[in-house]
Amino acid sequence: MAKLQVVQTREYRLHRLEVVDNGKAGFSVTIVPPPNRGQPREVTRDALVVTLADALNRAKAEIDAVMGPKPPPRIRPGGRPPQRLG
Image (cartoon, rainbow, N blue to C red):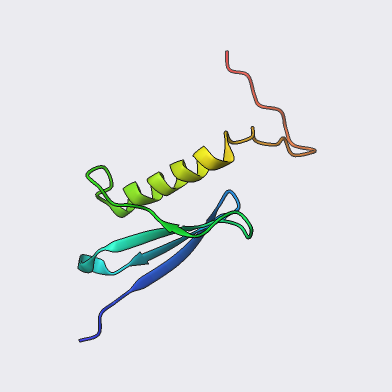
């Protein structure tokens, strides 16, 4: 019987996250930075990284640590201002 392997790529703050899920055999998450910004690295699994969601969150946290804080969301031109409550 053939083994099922699911491969996904996700973009996050100029980086690419490559997710490989082998079902019960496990999973891996690799962070691929933009060109000229370093080498790809795999998210290490330890006691805190148990699930695939944990690995994705750790990868995003590592990227945030390198890139610095996220900029505030931009206000689109012609958009309505936020409504005040009260």
